[in-house]
Length: 577
Ligand code: PEP
Ligand code: MG
Image 1 (tube, rainbow, N blue to C red):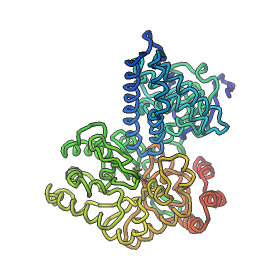
Image 2: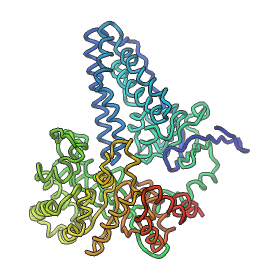
Image 3: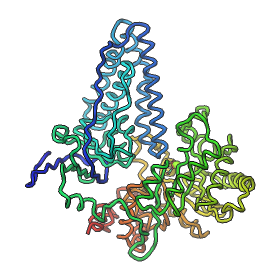
Image 4: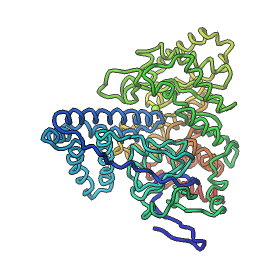
């Protein structure tokens, strides 16, 4: 829907796909056409090339998947993993191979073989299946590009811009350079399409499904994109920019967040690399509540040396100045593969040798290296340590024994040894239930609600179909959090939340009510979460949380929050006043 206001400015209306606002010049997506002067290969040689092209695309998907796992977007990584699986379907590939041997050009054969599959999805009455057709087209396009020798690296703008496109494929969205793309708008797409899901995971404001978009916007025109309202204003007046990016939604807020009755809740930020840390610092985060150290190890087939780790950690801590950084030790294995550390495949990777288990069982030397690097950085910066995937107190003791050795190695009496805070993630139900025992061993807990929800509901977090089952507002999870906070309080330990739940505006009043001390959120959410906390009364939230614990499901909890005007839209309206 398009409307022109009295000043002749164009307001375009679409579907709100990913929250947040962005103001930047338009940059029209440059489609590299799927055309080549050379026909695709045929015959036996063509069939071999087809195989190589498929392997190439699978390898690229694996790199992007690892990047998404690195930012904690495992469900979204599952989208690309599903695309890679399509390329493993023997029926589809054999069909294409046969055609190529009989003389059809390989790029045409791939398109022809996959077309009925995409058409079947498109014809489905279920919009979720319809949206999956775009994933098939995307993967076919990638294979064809590889076969025709066309570049698969898209052109990017030269300054921070809002991308305007007819449509973006999931792999294109995952590959957007976040330093140069501050949001995007598309003509096609739906809120449930994977492109929209990826935008939400990457923290990119997005509006999709805007009819006539590409013809309505020229390169370089100023755009104001509102991913909450689903609007795009072309050449916005100055006051519209101020209104939308005004105090309530301003992305920067370095003030402490206190509830109306004076309880401080720290709002840190999650970071998966240096760029995230810089965004967190700019947003005014109180610290880094979760530094996913996997980034130190990704992107190379060599493990980083201790000195290399020190240099990278110093860059992150320097970005945060005096604000604390919680370094989570390496959390890979099984479903978070690391090229430099190949591991045997497992029947149940999510229940396998991952996180701390991997290091304790197979590579204590790696943990020791990482801890020595961390201790050296902790000499100059308030760095804290956190171990992931803890199930038992023995694991914590083993990890602490390795830490004690590392302290000796780096002569850590001089390096912040006694002041170094050591915590664990609570993301396995056994650790949540045993939190009173674990609390004796550590300084703090951080609830990894992504995994805790997965293990509590026995629902694979990478399977979008099970998303509704693993509802983080379900009283079963709330009861578990309540138990952890009580155990921590008994031992005078503090508790944070670093899973997605901390960035969920529905969950914030409940987490505050349950007594959580820190929320670690996506950098673009820092200001909004702080503004939300300031609207709350901790005492009132505690009463609502107690009532929520007794309800029968997540929907009932949402209704209860709405009855108390604690749902996101009421809170937002209040913060806007
Ligand atoms: C979690 O499980 O909630 C968490 C923060 O860790 P990750 O998403 O990296 O597994
Ligand atoms: Mg986890």
